[in-house]
Image 1 (tube, rainbow, N blue to C red):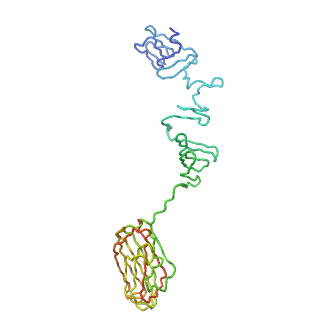
Image 2 (spheres, rainbow, N blue to C red):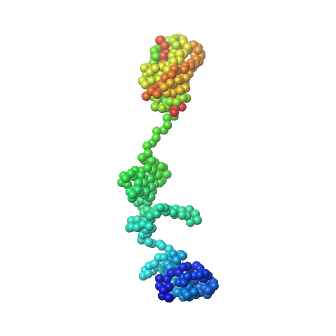
Image 3 (cartoon, rainbow, N blue to C red):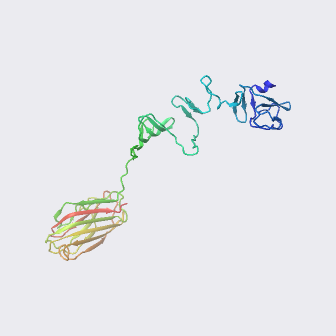
Length: 374
């Protein structure tokens, strides 16, 4: 009977301090410290239910037993029971599993580790938890030309990698096939400057379009003449209700010419007199006197598209009070266009100027702008 329970020894528990009631014949326990009842004074012994009573047997050095409720395998060294997976001494002649594992050649967890992948884990998830504070995962490399990186794969073919890949600048790169790699993000280790090597640089939004002419134009303008520097080519989609076209130009008048000055706002694809005049503003007549002044034009798009409408306001300030460029000290003129189509591809907005018969104007500076764009 002793051989029956001693060979391949297994105990139900080593944590039960009082004899279980109605224990089955053959039930075995390792009696813990401070037992009670029929086990009193039997701490450290094996308790075996046999023929309705408890038999006690002291363990001997070298005995091994399985603890069923803990699923642990223990060995007796003559003084205490040791967990054979954790507490076995490790010596060159008797290597065991030390309490602290400091140098395993490789480890596979539900996976086969190899000489390159010395730690291999096959699992739905991996948790690395803090112990009372923060947590760092450290990847240390030997030299700058080596790699310390995280590699993401599909079917064991690389798709993305981030870290220090062959240098000490941080990079994130991606691959469609695991062979050809493209850098997505680069971070300079010295400056922290971030670059996106394969991301197209978006053109800055258009806030204002501008044109000008710094060269003198004239003497002339006795007939309708397109004003160089007034034209602005419109990119597609920049116009919206509230967009403003503004123009200013300086004029020096000789004594010749007494006609009515006319400013025509033109919109079309030519950027020349061939473009239709959408607003015409006529000023008071001139007089036969030398004068200089500045014309301004402010145009606001009330609507855009196939039935666009603009409101134009023009003004003149000049040196002489009521002679020269105008017999009025500061005339202002307004005009509202008929509907026109702003969806014209390659459209140009600009101005032509007619000083009238015998005019000998010289225009010294032209400045044009288009503001409040979509």
